[in-house]
Length: 211
Ligand code: AMP
Image (cartoon, rainbow, N blue to C red; front, side, top):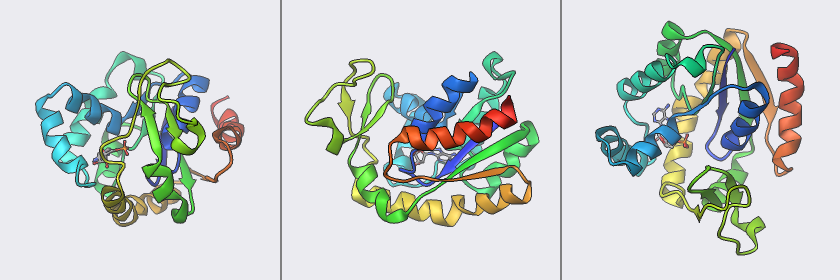
């Protein structure tokens, strides 16, 4: 089954994606991760994506849709996948409908007042992508999962975050309605509780759908 993870930046999609992907053995496809890998490798796509990501804007639809369409043809997607950060607007959702069937959309709603601190305090592992918050690190600079170096994403700064939240409200939030009308949305509420609490709620619902 193909599953989409929907939610504002900082809602906890990445953390939940890792857990969902492991539990249901679905490849985790994050368009943000794909762009960051391209930026690191200085590819043409990376160069283009960086100019948008640095401003908190969306990378053009044609480029993004082509990447996802190709990724879904890989062998590991034959039993489904977990899309994280795609689609991000109605055009992308309509395009996705032309090449994939969506079985469930896990939508994480969250109080916007929590997001600025969450994102600006976020540190991620350079190697495995695990996410932390500075307030819980006690000065640690290495990932407790794999030992990799913890870094702050270049776009996790107040000005860019404000743009990303505006883009979410204007372009991505309408997808809640889009998928509600299709009858595939599953709504959850993110909070300051540990990620395991939300994951338990998500897994209880997905277990019944996926079996
Ligand atoms: P994320 O890691 O999902 O927060 O994405 C980081 C940035 O990558 C976003 O702020 C966008 O600039 C870009 N990006 C990720 N996914 C998409 C998408 N589906 N469409 C356009 N841009 C995207």
